[in-house]
Image 1 (cartoon, rainbow, N blue to C red):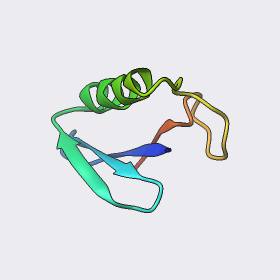
Image 2: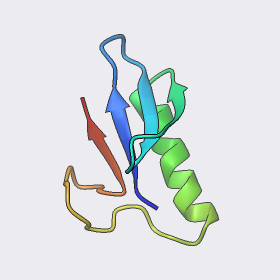
Image 3: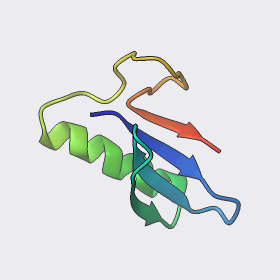
Length: 64
């Protein structure tokens, strides 16, 4: 599963699925990245698989 992180103007960050489903809004970008990476570690996958969009960590890509 690919997750994306949307940065909000107030500094918060929302973790969402590829289909646009909002999962949770975090207080900052770092917290959202940690949650995304923890999910991949827990489920035996490594974050960062190259699948399309790229900011160096595609499975947890950040967009604004």
